[in-house]
Image 1 (cartoon, rainbow, N blue to C red):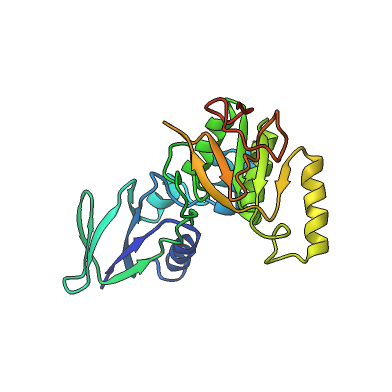
Image 2: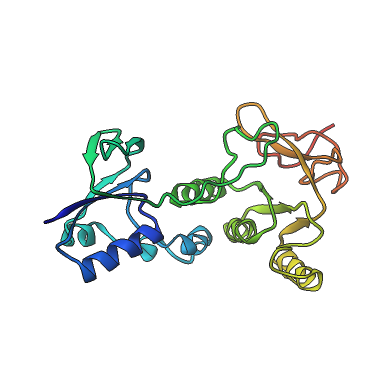
Length: 251
């Protein structure tokens, strides 16, 4: 007897689950796949080459529409799950309910945004999925400056990609050297020098106090009071930004 399997989240983990099931038990489950993104499984690890322009989204797709159709997976893409009723064994999607015998929740993690004033301003972008990547690409097309808060792996990949697209990038990192969870101080120093050769400005031991702006994010202010992307006063400048991009400063 076929069982109803509902999977929430179309990331790499659930993609591997579906691959295994269709290979080893092709007739056991009737699969319904929910995903808040309007697309199926793609390789999130390869988003950085998409950001830098080395690859396109099509290059990193793992399971396309034809693959899901071939394996009779019902796709509910672009649809949020609003409720799970374990007693009735029902998943409530925005477009209606689906009953299940088995349920897999594979939604992944949510990006952390530091709790500072201005974190909700437009043009403050996280880096987690294709929509975030496309937002950064669109922003980079306008040129100007970018501040990346966080000198971990994702932050540095974002900084490198934006720099490749022509933006002037400053990385603001709280700790004493980059990628401190993976690298010792000497290796962090060498990484910093390599990034600086690419034109990326690195600010370590720099704590973000606020993100300021009116209708969009215009500048980052550090706990020291500095505006780290000031072009006329240097890195010790405490002037507010002169324009909407935070490009330059003015008294």
